[in-house]
Structures are given as structure tokens and as C-alpha cells.
Amino acid sequence: MNRKLSRRRLLESACAAGGASFWPGSVTAAPDGFRIAPFRFDVTPPKGHPLCGGWITPVVDVEDALEAIGFVLLGAGAPIVVCAVDWTGILNEAHIAWRGALAEAAGTTPERVAVHCVHQHDAPFVCPETQRILDGVGAGLVNLDPSFFRDCLRRGAEAVREAVEKARPFTHLARAESRVSEVAGNRRVLLGADGKVAKMRGSACRDPELIALPEGLIDPMLKTVAFYSGEEKVVACHYYACHPMSHYGQGHVSSDYPGLARKRRQAAEPGCVQIYFTGASGNIAAGKYNDGSPEARVALTGRIFDAMTAAGRLLRPEPVRRVEWSALDLVPEVNPVFTLESEMALVTNPANAPANRIRPAMRAAWIKRLGQRVPIVLSALHIDATTLLHLPAESFVEYQLRAQEFAGKRFVATAAYGDGGPWYIPTREAFPQGGYEVSVANCSPAMDPAMTEGIQRLLGAAG
Image: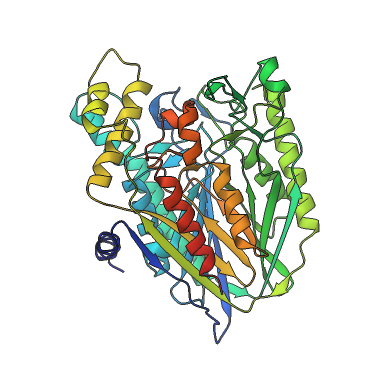
């Protein structure tokens, strides 16, 4: 597969459609059956590598390793690849490179690959164009080590190729959900008399007023979708919508509480590959129940593990009859409060703190990308009455809840934190309220109806 040709075809399709292109799914029944090939590989950054984009302490040590874990699904037309990565974010060109490398290794096309980050913060947050912008102005700041990035792609391609050679029959699917207690809460729960966000409940919180407020709008359910080969469970995908940070910023690399729960579940069920996806949680975090202490991380880990275990007990495998894949490209509008000139002025100002130079460089990279009309991708894997929905960046939980409403009786498990170029994706109603998420949203309010329509189209493509 020629990745350059594929990317050009994707881009031409998006431009021809005025900023959106759609590949509807078609019911596929493999004459010789479906197969599944789980894979995993290490993506732990080396000592000294930047974390969270380069504005917190770089790697000092590794408390627990970071992984990329996924599966290749064969027999439903061209192969399908789904992968979750223990990184903060994979943006723009980096996301295209990840999808291209895994696609080539699996023998498929990039639009049939979904790559998502779990979004832990003591982890890499990568954008090659951001690094080029920083280097171009002599900022002396580092967003990523290109050699480490290339090595991760190489290891990923090797892992996928090896997995495909060992693919197993995929015969049954099961899905279940379990309520998670005392983890998630909405961050935007305190509005002032003017209707704007007055204070925000973050990933960790010690403000008694904010802690005392209700959880607010969340999706309290952890969803599990499991793939079977005969009676044997081969892959279990877990989905939950909450920012995945308990504490961070001191250079101690960790997969944090969702990753630790996943690893604990892996130890309890070693024959099944466990994968965790963070749902649409741009406005959801653990601050109501998390004071940022090491003890809180242990408690949060246990609550996620308990929900995974409870969902696992409810799984009832059913024979797989059809598999479909659908994908949709969007070229969003840039948030009009940002311009290339305004962001580069911040990048070039040596008086600014590193975060206030690197973040504008990321926005500049996004603006340049949209100037070239390089789209972001939404996609969905439909297996009988179950849909795995793949959304970009830090989408608000409303998008996940809308998807479940649109789907009717279908079981929908949503993964967000795909292409991280947009950063936060608030709802249109959230923009007048302001708040942190709105202040760093790289798309305009028009992204809401565009993405909502895209979700409807993806779900409507299910057979």
C-alpha cells in the first residue's frame, strides 16, 4: 500500500465534498469466517523525553510502562485496525503517520485504521510540525524526539505484521456495561450569574465548594466489548468517559489509574488482551473524588477495575454474522479567535513560559494543516448490533450521549482522543460559557453540528 497515494486520495475526496467525505459501510459476511489478531508494543519514552508536550517535567523515571494495544480484524473486506496508545495525544501529521504505518503493516488503507490515546499526562504529546515551528524560531524547546517517534512506528508495524501471521478465528462477540462509582464528575459545574464558567473542577480538586457540588452531566457506565474465538475470550475492549489523570507533572511516567486497572485486569485474565479507551470526556474529570494524592490513584484504579470485572461477569457471547466499517472525513473551521499571526507572536516571545510557547505552536500547526485542507477522521466499526465509535480529540461527553441516543437499541461504545489536532471539542452551547476548554478549542462552534451530523451518518450506515 502506498501511503502517499492513499493520503492524497483521502484529501482529494474531502476537498471535492466541500470539507467532508464519507465511506458508508456495507454488510460483509466472510465466506471463510472472520479472524482477529491482537497486538501490543512498548511506547515508553526514554529518560529526558518531554511529557505532556514539553511544558511539565520531562521523564525522570518510569513507574509503569506505556503500551500501544490493539487488534486487526480480518475477513470484512480490507483489514481493519483499532489501537489505543498510552500517550497524552497524537496530533495532525503524527496521527496520519501512525495510521499509515499500521495500515501498511496490516495491508489496508489509513481510513480503515483508528488510533486513540488514553490521554495520561505523564506521557508524550506529539506533533512533528510543532517541533519544526519551535526549531524554526530558535525557541530551544522540545515537543518530541523524532527518533523515538520513528522507533515507535517501526515497533508498531512489526507488532502488527507478527500479529496478522497468528490471526485466530473471530466467531463471537459480547457486550456489557457496569456503573462506575465515585470517579467521574463534570468539570463545568459552577456557572456565575452571567452564565459563564466561574470555577472549574479539574482532574484533581481540593476546593470544598466544588467537591460538594453534584457530579453533573456524565456517562456513568463503563462499557466492555469482548471478541471470542469459539469459547475463548481473545480481546476485551473497555470504554469509560473520564479524564485519566490522578496526579502528574513530576516526571514519573505512568499509565495512571485506567492503565493500572487495565494491567490489573490483564493479570487476572492473562489469556485475553485487555484494551482501554477513554471516552468523550473533554469536560469530565475525577476532581470530585480525587485530591491528587497517591492514595487517590489507588482508589480510582480499584473502582475502574471493579467496573471492568463486573461488566466481564455480564458478557454473553453471540455468534458474529456481519461486520461493517464506515468512515467520514471532516475539514473543520479554525476557531476565529486564533490566527497564525497571533499564535506565532506568542511562540516567538522568549518572555513566555514554555507552555505558552508550545501550545501556540500546536495551534499554528493546526491552522497550517487546515490551510492545506487535511481532514480529521471519524469512523465506526459495526458488528451486528454493536458499534465501536471513534471520535477525535477531547470531545465533550455530550457527543457520546448523543451517539447513544441516535443509535436506538444499538450498543455503542465510544472512544475519543483520536486525532488530537482540534484539542478540545466543546458543544456549540458551551462556547458562550467560556472556561478553560473553550479557551483552547482549536475549532469554531460550527464543529458541533458538523460532528453531530457525522456521528448520525456513521450510525446510520450500520446494517
